[in-house]
Image: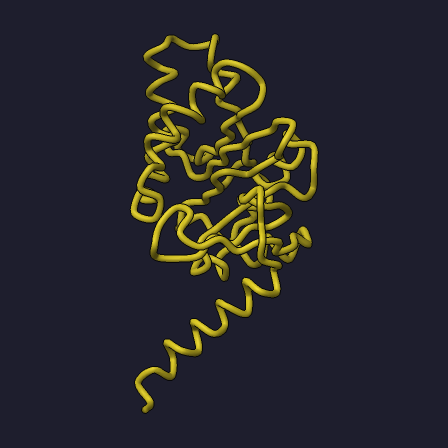
Length: 193
């Protein structure tokens, strides 16, 4: 990449291009994350019926994206954001595999933080993606505050940082971590009998 990265907001395109061009851009942004449907089966529905319409109308949601400076037709990173009275959340955060390690994640997180108005946004991720997100989590000092099972799928637990997804959280974080540890140990040593 030879040129400076530019973080763009999909909101800026609502009235500046034709409806067809807008939907093409919104679709291109979505397509770099279409694989998320494997983990979150309702991701496509959420993006097109909740995130995108609320980005177009109102000020509670936004979609940020980064184009490849050497090929502006290629979207290489995106973030879906939500900001309302209850939460300031990074709903989706993605940098294309071949562009990781170049600081793009930091740039889009910085702009997300600016738009959300907090350095501690709620962000959740599947437990098996923790290592991928660890550098960003550590950089900003985000705190694990809740672990939720069965929320989006039965494959993994959802790790919540800087907030909670459940309103009536009866278990403490320590209790949740203990249960997870017991499950992991049980699976690891099940074959030894």
